[in-house]
Amino acid sequence: MSLNKKSVDDMNVKGRRVLVRCDFNVPLKEGKITDETRIVAALPTIQKLVKDGGKVILCSHLGKVKNGPNEGESLAPVAERLSEKLGKDVPFISDYNVTGEAATKAVEAMQDGDVILLQNTRVRGAEETKNGEDFSKELAALADDYVCDAFGSSHRAHASVEGVTKFIREKGGTCAVGYLMQKEIDFLGNAVENPVRPFVAILGGAKVADKLNVINNLLEKCDTLIIGGGMAYTFLKAQGMEIGKSLVDDEKLDYCRDMMKKAEEKGKKLLLPVDTTIASGFPDPIDGPIEVSFVDADKIPADMEGLDIGPKTQEMYAEAVKSAKTVVWNGPMGVFENPTLAKGTIAVAKALAETDATTIIGGGDSAAACNQLGFADKMSHISTGGGASLEFLEGKTLPGVAAADDK
Ligand code: 3PG
Ligand code: MG
Image 1 (cartoon, helix red, strand yellow):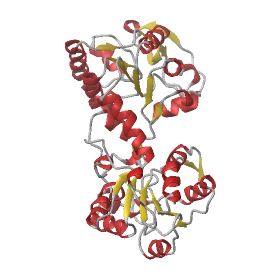
Image 2: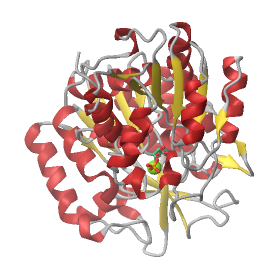
Image 3: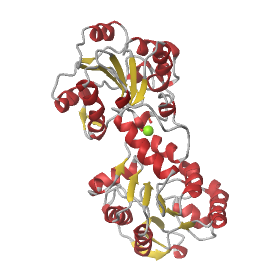
């Protein structure tokens, strides 16, 4: 996948209508935004286009819309927050057609430097998620040029991410990436394709099955691969160890053996937990009190469950990070939502915070962990993409990246 894409710096948008796909898929609680990271991350691109005198038409999906038209969450709270952040009114086109008369009229009334926000693209249901041609054309009809700044959605070949670009290009418009997208591509792309070595990758999270291609691809690129979290127990079991009631992916035992063999053949270090934090079961509620003890990885009693890496492993992993020049981390080391079981994740976050290496956090849970545990401002880059950053680390082509014009 070519990563040398036209950006907003390569456009001349004065007086032109620019459709900007953002990822405003923010968490909401009772209609209130609980984490505005993705809104803040989108501001530089919007501000640049405003300053250059473009007519800025923002769009995004929000949540999963199962049943199609006229259902699902409205983007209204995002328009309100954007108005505050930009210090200017961002009219919201609440029409559940997304495109159509209301949107067309609003665009016609725009002055240079104005910003509007369209309704949640996913309320168009399959037309959006199956890359429908009609919806793609309707979106393209609203604008002259297109900017994708929705890194978190760039792994989706949806109408507002991918389909629309064909019709913008057809009428001679530019399809570029925004600053957020560019930053994600630069950090993740360089880390994987061009890392300053030693390159250490840290993977955690519950299931091996979710990370199969990531493990495989990173073993090609990195010098050391560190495994923690629930998925580590499948690796331990694959080595013949008793893992008690710990999470396991029995169908992936052979896969784990293959990966351990691959690491050995390629001369890569593959680090697995040497000890673990155990309890009699998963905490309920997840952040409730829990009694734990520590055992070596090969001494997990049959009636106990491993829920975090142990203290020796924490030290070993922190040590492995010290000599790194590039670190990529995706997935927590244990049940970090529980203070007693967050120690492994904290130890890794702290090691990353203290190194001079370039540190890149794949989105989703590891980003949440960094934010929640107070290490966010110590990292070089925290990705705004969950699924998208994983697919990037898998070496996959992301439709939203591929769809932008090459330089
Ligand atoms: C995300 O939050 O992961 C992105 O916004 C993509 O959302 P999706 O998984 O619903 O496509
Ligand atoms: Mg997702």
